Amino acid sequence: MTSHITAPPNLALTGILLALGGSVTLSINDVAIKFLSGAYPLHQVILIRATIGILFLVMLIRFSGTGFAQLRTTRPLDHLIRVSIVMVSNVTYFLGLAALPLADAVAVAFVSPLFVTLLSVITLKETVGPRRWAAVIAGMVGVVIMLRPGSGVIQPAAILVLISAFCYASSHMMTRRMRLTESAITLSFFVQIGFVLVSCTMGLIAGDGKFSGSSNASLAFLLRPWTWPPMHDWPAFLATGLAVSIGGLMISQAYRTCEAGLIAPFEYAGMPMAILWGVVIFGTWPDATAWIGIALICGAGLYTLWRETIRRQESRFDTRSGRV
Image (cartoon, rainbow, N blue to C red; front, side, top):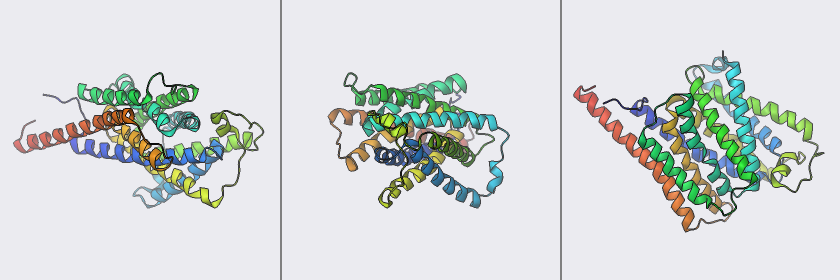
């Protein structure tokens, strides 16, 4: 019997762990951005974050086996497309995050694993079996429960987050397409360069605050003037820079090495982390309905992890017994 999963079992488990670790790490970025969104413009936050990220990546490249040679690429157009998609995803997400509670924004954003699974079938011709579909759908049901349809969560800011989710999924399709020639470090490095260029351009246009003054939280985050951060805000800038670099590398490597439909459910780990940060940082505690959603989200990922563990054991048995 032929399995629909093409990633070797060991590689699949590594990809799952990378996705889990990356999602947890990126949740720190969300908290830091939410914290900074009340005092700084988005393009200033992104510039500082990207600068920190580039410094971190340069250190990794310096001590990696291939060094800076890995930044040479024959696919500049693909990088440009991917960087553009990632930037749209980030900007729309953080503009929505500025106007929504952290958990609500993250819940809406977790439409992205469903988009990833759908796009992997359509654009990459990957085979997604019923168990993976079940995991993604179960996680989505958990998100819908947390959204509480009709409670007012779906608003213009949430639509921005939905756009971000689609772009985020699309960027992973590009990662899968480029996986054979581009390393995770290379993919992340060019994204950070793109952020620096765009944020500097935006700073030159609106950094003096001439377009500021909107009462809308998202527009205020986009258009307020640049200010020099006091020392007590630098830990948040450092956190977002390191979190997006480390988490981004882990997620990129997961999608480079494993099928998108396998990795997607494990990004739901960011949802319970958003709840945790909401409790610890912002003092908001989930109610009973939210806990039902969290249980479904976590259960979806744990079920897929269990299935991959069973498959790994079966594969080892088949190898030892000489079966193909």
